[in-house]
Image 1: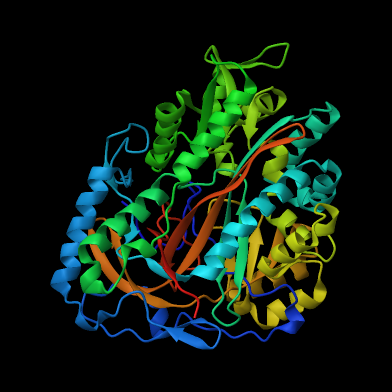
Image 2 (image 1 turned 180 degrees about the horizontal axis):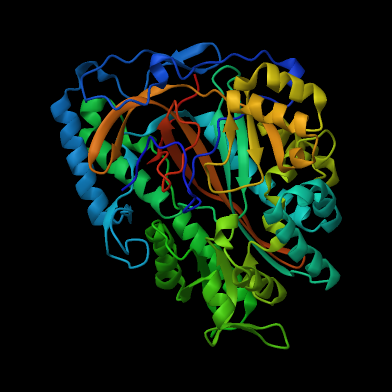
Length: 543
């Protein structure tokens, strides 16, 4: 069962909805407004019954207003309930599923305790020009991550203070250091990324929240939600005033499968397999199985699933660097685990991670790609003139800078002072993935004051990010077979794939998208963790 309104969670899958962090790079050039608060009616997380409702116009472009995706004036509850029923049938028949956490073994045995993935009943309206921008910069971000990953000195120096106070980051850096000492060169490099954005209501800017380089979840289920909404609009579009053709195509699962298959081909051993590194209990397994099924059906490449503990027990590194797990040669290691401290409960898991890094197998991601996606590196890249260290094209640099939100380290005393005075305008982020880790509101102030009192180096474990305030709009959220009407905000994720063999770039593409929607009062938003629902895009023409 997926609960939408829980505010803390032990991460289970990297399908979380990120913070609502920021507005622009240069803090002093912006006037900030708190667009909604937890006391406003628009942010209530209370579940309300389905009723006909009037929806106000909302600003979505500079100086102009557009209608919300549905005008609720003429929609009665009977129509909504019929749409919900049809959507639940479609989801059940087409595999839009997750494991039901209330059912034992639902995260371990396929087919046991399945429940529909939480979803929005109708797609969210999104400006086409902003969507195109997010797709356009995806290959640039892919290239940036690759170049940053090759600069071992930059990664080590940027994370040096964090290493002193964050055990998890320290262990990752230790593995990275060993690879540098070995002069280990990853000639074949594969990245399957997802860059997450929110559209700031005040500035009308599409601002990046973060770039995920490890375990970018929902390549499978995101495609299904787009298909679900397209199917619903084909049947109900006339009554809703919506055109199913305005939902963009979404083929992430096949594009990711193609990238994995091409990496497997570059490894050049037809007997080798792709290994998916998974958590011992994974309620988001069907998203992963969709990808493995596409890999097998379209490319005849076999994938096996192993936990880090199983890799430690069954893994073997041959003298020539070949990685064997359970006697099978591994061509590609695809991580859907290994991004959080909870994935390493013992030394066995760390031994497995080191074993894989030492091998000739293609890692997705390698340890250097993993580190390149950390919060601290994101903050370092946002500093003036740092992008120029890695990219030559000035137009590309300008495009990326326009997407950057405000990011600062806690050694910036002016920003820390401002955050203490106006904590509601900032998010305090640790070096963690998986959701449920960020700090908001008065907790930002309390933690900053605590760090000042203690005078330790713990501040290096965090960065500050400005909060983004996206448009709040009504929507229907379907969880556990029940539809709830509430006010919500949405986050766009754009997938990218990058494959390189030495100097030859084989793939550098935008591969699809993910939309997640959450109740506006919720700071976090993992779909599997229970903070958000899957959604899709309804493209709105630029006005």
